[in-house]
Length: 346
Image (cartoon, rainbow, N blue to C red):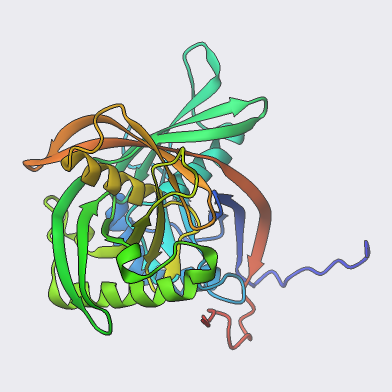
C-alpha cells in the first residue's frame, strides 16, 4: 500500500539502528537517537549508561522491539588514538564488557560504510580499531567486491583464571569447570557428563543448567580481575563438546546474561578457550581451530602471540567470522504506551 504513510509525532523519541547477525547471533547497531554516555574511557561510559540510560537498553533489547535473546551495541566516538570508534554492548540484563560476534558484525557494517584504513596497497582489506570496555581491539575486514566476506580481530589479552575448579550445583551435584577471561569471564563446562546435547532442541535444558551453574558460582566464588574491578564478574557459562564436523575442533553453547543463548560460537568465549587450551598445552602459537555454535555456524580462533597481564600468562587471540545485515530500523517510543520500556517473557 504505497499510500500507507504513517509518521510519528515530532515529540516522540526516535532511535535508528542497523541490524545484523554474526553466524546467527543478532546485533542491533544503534547509530542515532541514543544519548551519548559521558566518560573518558568506555568503562566510564558503561557506568554512565547503566546509571542514566538503562531504560533505553530495555526499549531496544526487550519485547516488543526485541526479545529475550536480543543483543546490541551503541557506536560512540573513540577514546584512544588507534581507534576509529568505540562501542558499548548491551543485552537483556545490562551492558557487557566485550563481544566478539559484536565486533565482527559492527566492523562489517562500518567497513562497508567506508570506515577504516586501507591496508597499504591492498584494496581488499580495511583495518579498524575499536575501543571496547575491555580495551582496544584491532579488526581487519576482508572484502570480496563491495561486500565484506570475513572479519578477523585481535582481541584483548586472554588468560585462564582457574583450571579444574569444582562447584556444587543445586539439583545437579558436583560440576567441574575451567574459568578464563577473553574480554569477559566464562566458566567452561563439558556438556556430555551432564547429559546435555549441544543442539537447538536442547536449548531449554541448556538455559536451565547454565543458570544453575552461574548461580552456584556467583553465590560461592568471587572473581578479581587483575587490572580492572569492573571486569571482575562471571558473564556466562560455556558448554563445550565434540564438533559435528570432523574438520572442526569443538562446539560451544554459551548461556550468558539472564539466560541468553548465543547463536554464534561466542568470540570472547573462543578467546578464553584458546587461553585454556594453550595452558593445557593442547594448542600452540599460530595454531588455528574452528569452533561450532549451537546452529553449526563457526568462528576461527588462532593464538597470535603470548604475553603477560599483571604477571599472569596470557595469549593474544585472533577470532574470525562473517556477518550479514538484516535491516535498517527507526524505532519510536509512544509516551502513552504502558509497555514503552519493554518486557521479557520466556
